[in-house]
Image (cartoon, rainbow, N blue to C red; front, side, top):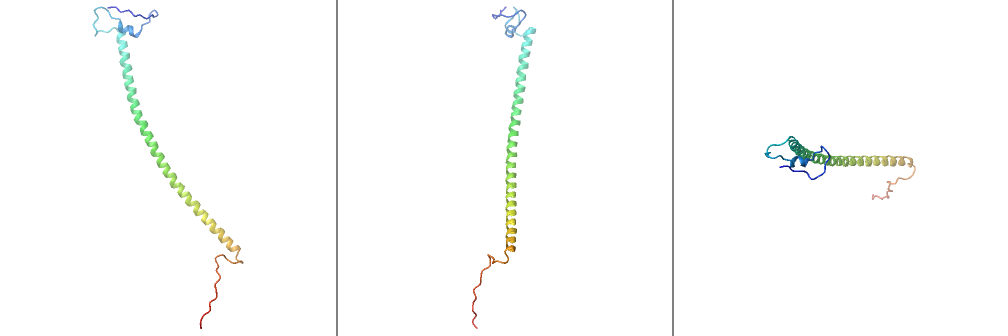
Length: 130
């Protein structure tokens, strides 16, 4: 059986479907011409390449998910570390401020030594019974 392609083509140009459609009388379906073998080989190669790419994408997907999970863990640890360091810095500033105010209070107490002190409370005289 000779099948003829219905599409127009240039001289010497072979369409992939033409390679599958053309069959000679008496050809067994198991016997392939060189062109048909090439087409089948390209199909198998494409199928295998797609399979490999899909497998690589799946494994890279798992790798990407693992990286995202690791990034979230690192973010959580960093956030915790920053909170601890912030608390440490707040304590440092509070202690520094308290020390500064204590020094300022002592300096003011020395300069005002001639006047009455705020902490001094006058005592009332009490009479003792003899």
